[in-house]
Image 1 (cartoon, rainbow, N blue to C red):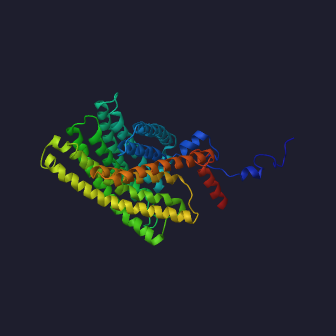
Image 2 (image 1 turned 180 degrees about the horizontal axis):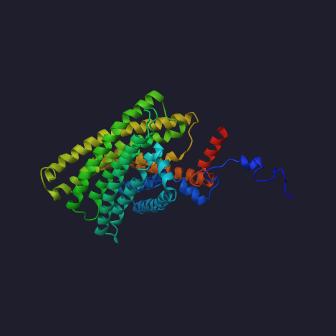
Length: 415
C-alpha cells in the first residue's frame, strides 16, 4: 500500500533532500582522471631526458656505447613528448574552459606551461645532433630541425609573453609569495638560444646562410632571458631575506633559480663557437659584424660573459643544496613532483661546464662535467622510482577521487 503521509516518498525522505550535490562526480574513471588533472609539469620528464641525452652526446669523455645511450635517452624524450602532448591536447579538447582557467588561475602551473615548448626544443636538438648525422639521416633532417627550431622560437616566445601578461592581468602576487616556477619561461627563451647554437654548429652540412639568422635570433633570445631573469631575481632575494626558506614541499623549486643564468651561459658559448670555430660568420661575410674578423673577439666576449653568468648560477646552486640539506637534517624533506624540476636547471650549468672544458682544454671542467652528468642520471632514476610508487598508490597521475567535487562538498559542509 502506498504510504499516505508521504514519509517514504521521494519528497518525504530527508536523506535524499539533504544529500550534497556537486557539479562533477566524486569518483571518475582512470582515463578521465588522468586527462582532467594532467599538469604541464609532466613535460619536465621530456626536458630531463633530452638534456641528459645532449650531455651524453657532448661529453668530453666518449666511450663505446655512449652514443647509443644518448640515442636511447633522446628516444625516451621523443616518445614521452608525443604521449604527453596527446594527453594535454585531450585535456583542452574535453574540458576547454575549465582546463584554461585552472592553468591561468594557478601561477605555478602557468609558469610550468613553458615546459611544453622547452620539451619541443629538446626534440629539435635530437633531430639536429643525432638524426641529421645518422647514416639514414643527412641534410634533409637538418632542414627538418631548422623548421622545428623556428616553430619552437614562435612557440616559446608567445608562451613567455602569454605567461607574463596573464600573471599581470589575473594575479596580484605579493613580493613574498613569488613561486620559483615563474623562472621557467625565462629558461625557455634561453633554451631556444642554446638549441640554436647546437643547430648552427653540429647539424649536417648546415650552411652559413641558414645558420646566421638562427645565431642572430639566438643572441636576441639570450638578452631576453637574462633581462627577464634579472627583473625576477631581486624579488626572489627579497623573499628569501624577508620570509626565509621556502616551505618544505617547495624546497626543490630553489634549483629553478639556477636555470636562467646557466642556460644563458651555455647559449653564449655555443653561439660564439658557431660564429667563430665553425666559421658561420666567415661563410656569411656581410657588413661589419657578420665577418670572420669580428667572430674571434665575439667568441672571447661570449666566453667571458659565460663565466660571469655561470658564477651567478653556481651561487644559486649552492644555496639550493644548503636548503635541501637543512630540510634533510630537520627531517622535513619529502619527495614531490617538483623534484623533477631539479634536473634541467642544474643540467644547464653542466652544459656550460662542458663547453669550458673544450674552450680551455681543462681536465678540471671535464671531470666536473662527468660527475655532474652521473649525478643527474642518478637523480633521474630516483625521481622515476618515487613517481612510479606514487602512481601505483593512486596518489599521482591517476587519482580517481575528483578534488573539485571534494572541494565542493567541503564548502557545502562549511555552509
